[in-house]
Image (cartoon, rainbow, N blue to C red; front, side):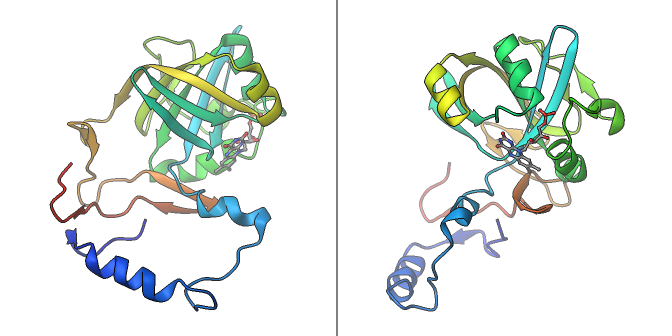
Amino acid sequence: MTAAGNDEETLAAPIAAAGATAGEGSPQRRAVELPRAYRLLNHGPVVLVSSAHGGRRNVMAASWSMPVDFDPPKVAVVIDKSTLTRELVEASGSFALNIPLRPLARATEIVGTDSGREIDKFAALDLGTFPADKIAAPLLAGCAGWLECKVIEEPHNQEAYDLFLAEVVAASADPALFSNGRWHFPPASPRTLHYIAGGAFFETGEAFTVAGEIV
Ligand SMILES: Cc1cc2nc3c(=O)[nH]c(=O)nc-3n(C[C@H](O)[C@H](O)[C@H](O)COP(=O)(O)O)c2cc1C
């Protein structure tokens, strides 16, 4: 997530450097305790999972989400059995993934710590919402993008791994931050968040392209 410092990188230097430095006993490689191994991948963009059913609505943080298909687009997200979100997602068969920006970092930590069973997180944190296009769950203001998702029932995965697969039935984004199919954060604009643990985040760094590959 750190800034690359240059607009373009050549392949030769990083590959040579990796080969020279990552061997056994190298100072560039040290064992990570297995219970913390997930943290090596944990800084994908954190999302806020919003849900609604039967007059109740809720929002929680999730670091464990990822795309799994292009067309129709599908995502996967882990939603623990203990959460109110799980109850509302199972009842409604849908949820939204809201991609928060840095001003929502504190709220992200809180909606990822407190349960909607005890407090109304929208009211307590003064979170703005607006209606989704295709699902009942509200979308959160102050986010960079929104994925409206309908659950693809996979009972074994849900029960054994708390893993929900879903089809993205509508998607939208702030055009100042995402257009022509890619993120491009203008200087000084708020960035999306990447969670480490214990209230620590990165924000998305500088964009760059590798030689000969403009996407
Ligand atoms: C940054 C962050 C990321 C989290 N990621 C996940 C996740 O991927 N899956 C999950 O089940 N819980 C995750 N949690 C924990 C839930 O957000 C937490 O249990 C939440 O309080 C559940 O709220 P609810 O009971 O109102 O649904 C995360 C918490 C934080 C702070």
